[in-house]
Length: 438
Image (cartoon, rainbow, N blue to C red; front, side, top):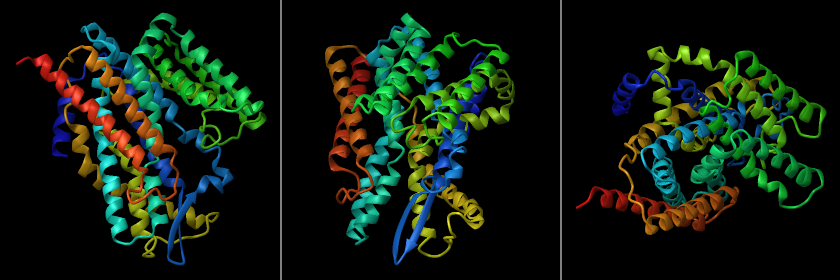
């Protein structure tokens, strides 16, 4: 972590004046709010020597409107599109190609994720050897792997970015607008007319639309005055209220509206995009101060580690605090339950700090900066490796909380991911060595 402080000082000093600092701030804030939200809704129980838990959102209906504040993944995908577009434009300008960009861009994403894919199975093997209840192991492994859902969706967009950015250059704002229409039609067919399978397409098109809006933001196609941006936010909010409070969609933005993403979620995304654009000038002025900007840099430097390990931190905190009686279990509808959220959140944060201290160095390693040699072998290996990584993430993400063997996670998914990550790593290393010459 001493290296983090030095890196933050260096990056803060070298930040160009024209950088869109607000995008970095929103990325950090979005992930931190997701972490806080996940921890808050975890309701842990310990009865008759059995540790278990559930999602408080399934019981506390009054929390549904609160999810409008904490469902901020649209902001993360918007900023992801902004950053991806900026990176792709720079890469193309220097003579790079799409496959080379994918190899470089996935490097930082996969290094911390691979650590999780190695540590969780190995830890599970040790736990099984110690004679721990297998049902508890299955539930714990599932909780710890929940962040992989979001990573899967984001990594799909990263892999598709060369083609999505080419579409953006041709179609501009028409591309994300068309995707929103596709989501609306898929919702009508899937949720309204109960046509099977069709609704699942929104897993791709909803997040893709927001990602494309990030391209548009970066290229100046969303250049709005503060009043215009607030009007967009108000329009999105009106649509959200119409679709949920008045219309057929549930108010909560977790569950039905995200699995798969719905038109109501895109209404929320529109509200958030309007607010991001309205607050942009003020945020950039504030972030020119060294203190706030350094905090944003430090958070983003380890943001993927924080995201990947935050549910594992909750599992560890639950195992330590609840069976021992340190953390009581007041009724879920009581004021005491809300008050005890404060020490619960503090305990999760403390465990996460330890995990970040252990694993952040993997993310902090300098990313691949050399140019990557082109060639059919590189292109084929990148496609195959990316497909295996995505398949592994998907298998693990949909596996559910059951017992999947002594590794905790499904063997097939773990092996597919690790093989794909290894192929991509070898391809990067070989390309760099080839480019460097003898």
